[in-house]
Length: 338
Image 1 (cartoon, rainbow, N blue to C red):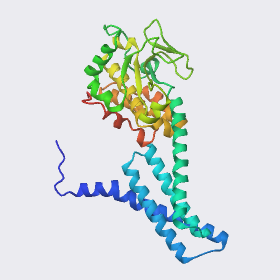
Image 2 (image 1 turned 135 degrees about the vertical axis):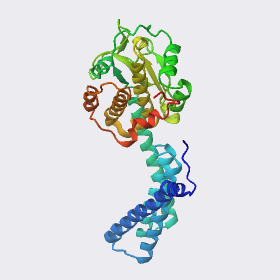
Image 3 (image 1 turned 90 degrees about the horizontal axis):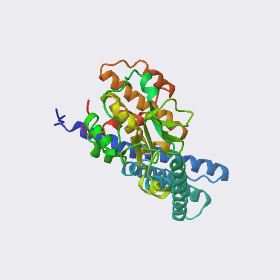
């Protein structure tokens, strides 16, 4: 069923909340900051002027409103958004300072904008560089965790995966449209081998991924890692991920396959939208909590017991910010099989 809004009320409300409200809020915050800076500096220098005070109000309102509007044009974590907002904050500060010190107002605004934009750009680059090296740390789901969740990992009569195509075909059959889904979040599914696994991981005799990472218990069936060629590609094009699937998943049931494919897709989505850079050391617990919450709901939808999986969910904190909501990731899987 297609939702119809003949009155247009929802469109108007959506437009207001998406575009107008951020501009209004930006103007309020910008005014408060600009007035605050002026008041403090005027008190220190004993140079209060109602004319300059009024100009600081106008300057803060304009820069704040523009900043609020730009936040809707650029992505929140994008380079140009960060630079633009830094320049606007710098312009407000520089203008207020010029009013206090008696310098040329326009010159103060321009200098402040250049300095603010430069500092913001450098800060963004540093945070993204840290995120690039952090992205080399894989996210995984282990067979032990699946067993604890109540999944049947006994041999279902299939064959071990031996090619990438087998992995991708099973994604098509059990989870959703493979190519369209991976294109949506700049990822890919590959068969895990000793040659393409990150250092400290290998294929064991059970055709599962064995890891030396003490934080992971059991044998891994799926692992998500970074596939950017270099730092510059990561910086300019965003994170590209790769999901490595253990050969052993080929002999598992379809519900286990969907659980692993979906779990790792959620990790890849979180990397794609830049959450690793934004949340730093908290990222791992949040993305794992979200992915395990998906697996719990998958079990519930299949009428299977999910109670033991709650332990895994709570082991990672049992909570995550709304931006980590797994439903946003699953929506990116085209024709997800429910």
